[in-house]
Image (spheres, rainbow over the protein chains, first blue to last red):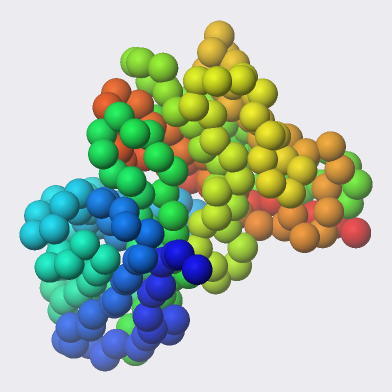
Length: 115
Length: 113
């Protein structure tokens, strides 16, 4: 079945640690996205990528980094510079070409908690 | 520029009652509109989308939405609520050649027995 997988489902981070969240898709989509979700704040865009080896900052990129070495993979690293990383993180993908107006497909999410 | 406003962060209905979740958008060009549903601790799932064909769009689980250009609205309805409809609902808009949607803040639907 085609879809998006995220791992791990739950992640715990100690202060000062970097952690990496995995996102893989087998939908052959060009565009991939990372969102952060906090209660009552909807979805906030962290980073997005339209093609391999290229990505852009979203609205809240500070303290995060990404890479896009393969079309199907878009890992997110939460660095120690992110002061309040406890949140639910969602990865999404879409056809991505401007003008296609395709819906996004979402993974099941990773819940990150800082200890 | 595009924006979305979802009126009401929480909507409470009784089982069997009409569900109405409101979404208003702002867009300088004809928009594409989406409703997504999110169950607790899960990702978002597409309910339905409007892409300039029929103004009344039918989706999964008995939901439908009507695009009203004059009111810049895309409200989501379901004639009879079921307990399993309890979830968070997000409205989103795409327009102006962008492939990045703008999401509303979400509305939590609570269904009472």
